[in-house]
Image (tube, rainbow, N blue to C red; front, top):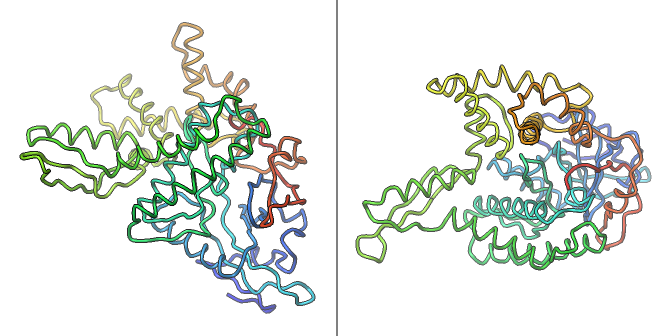
Length: 440
């Protein structure tokens, strides 16, 4: 779609009027505060800003026309494949200022709610165990993308967003500018992505260590090596062979169960003869992430992260065991949703409901209830634990789904480096969210 001023927008579906009304005639760094949204930004080679669009928030990145077109199409393709990535909104070209001087094209994506760039995750001293969970999430993201045939080309923590997922993290691709989609990646392509990732992650961790945001005993190079180990372990589990005898069918079932526990369904697998006489080899052929997500969705209609789904399924199993051990699973799941989950979420004060996703609130409450039961030596009911959980835990979290109107904290100013393509600091570092109490 083109406007009368020569502005051209490429988008899927209807282009909202609010998008056309944004001040495209100004360089992004000069956009007025009344259209900008207060969210933390990570390091980028380009100018990036967040803006309001109706009742939601969008991310806008100034880049070249070729890069904007490529990334917009790449993100659309990845979205159709179900990849964990941000959603593209539009590609904007033909921009010019009031004097007719050309301005950089822009890529518009939808902001991923409840997510933060890695530097905001490290706003307080990051414990070594939490860092490992972050690295594991990055490795899983890379495995998922490689299984889809996506060659990233610029793997880094900076090009990723992270969301809570029941004590772990879920990683999402946020920058596909250098990416390519292939029917299948070669070993060389995967290995080059790993090499780039190892170098970038080590450098990013060294930078954080200089700022004092990571435990002193963390070794940046060794941690980037752990990323490689995590990736290789996942890749082998998802694509490697399992050798077994014809009378060892349980080995097949065990392999599939391990994949389910990792959060993958096995849609197809190959069984072929091994070089050893009488032995067979099992190799998963088509694996699909989201095993627990799909199961919970089918049972309750709740759409949550994978580890959150795993935790809620465990809560449903416990509810079923307590109320009707031999009853139908679907009925128990429905009753748990109506009698436990929804009433708990409804009791959260309205002003606190943007602190965490509902599924994450339930996960945190279950953990809190367990810890309190341990301290008091009795089984504390959820209903009894909820009020103190709200006051002692939930109220202290930052609002992860809404925008902060306060000026950025000194911590956030330190985290917001906003480097442009020349490596210099972006001076317009305002409109950033206070990321305190997110994860440490």
